[in-house]
Image 1 (cartoon, rainbow, N blue to C red):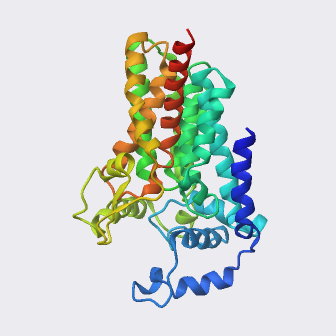
Image 2: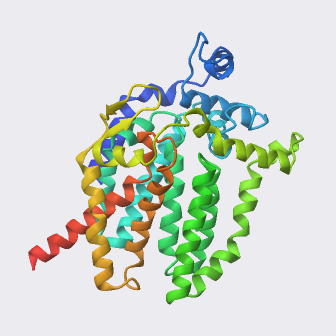
Amino acid sequence: MVLILLVFGWTILTHWSSYTTPYDPDYWQERYEKSQWVKGWESEETMGDAELYAYAGWRQIQGDDPTEINPEIPPFSRYLFGLFILIFGNQNLQALFFGAGLLAVIYLMAKEVMKDELWALLPVLLFSLEKHFQEDLVTSMLDLPFAFFISLVFYSLIKGRSNPRWYLGVVISLALVATTKMYLVGFALLGVVVCYLLFLFLVFRYQDLFWFLLFSPLFGLIYLGNYLVYFLKGHNLIDFKELHFWIRHYARVQIPGYPQFEIWRILLLGQWHTWWGEGIIRLKQWSPLWLLSFLSLFPTGWFIFKKGIRKNLSLLILIIYPLSLLAMYSYGLPYPRYLLPVLPPLYILLWYNLKLAWEKWKK
């Protein structure tokens, strides 16, 4: 715990100005109007994704249509950024909230599986040292809130085994995933959860699917509620459908010949096939632990097969968690930071297997 707090605190101290510099809406408005987002790639100024999300959030919290700026991104995360700017005067403080929340959920998931508080802290420590995690702690990118809500989905799914009211948390978290960064991931995860619950229904558990279906209307209400201002500005459901159709094809239309399954090259080899013509580059953030953690899926799967699914549903969920995300990312334009929500369950399973090996060695 001390080591985790030291790593977290050191990141804050070494980037103190990122959290204390007041947000200047006038400056960023002028910067936006001169940037490539308005004038194309021949513009005088460039504006990064993090700056764009923060500016869009500020405009949204002032009451603007959430699809006027950066319409391919769902509005919820940008509302959060705007809210932090409004209350605290800074766009990066939200990253500390989501970063700490993500570490807490990783610990709780690991504790559910390992039944040991010390062992449960080890994957948290490992993840806190991740370069992508530390980089996102000092910026207003979407990956931290996205990873936080995804982790809440699967933690709530694990807790639903003992208390079916946790399926309310599953539904709410799924809706927040869909409205944070990629709506397709949220809807695809909804399908993954339904398939998992159908499997339980067909095998031995009946109440799980009932409780999930009872709460499921909240998913649509939360998702549509994020676009309330969009509808109040005069848009209708046909516009809403066309917007999502456009978002679905936005990335692929830009780079139609980009190969699929490139996310696996990033995870297993630390190589990124860039889409702007630079070719394949080595990732400085890559660690051999990514590959080792992925390989830990196989002994875990064998353990479940030997001991039975009924007694190891938590482990089954932790296998479904990363594999479903990797399957979704296989068909898009991947960025290395997309692995931020994939690594927590892999690190938990890595330490789980090490714990089993340690206990066998002691015997």
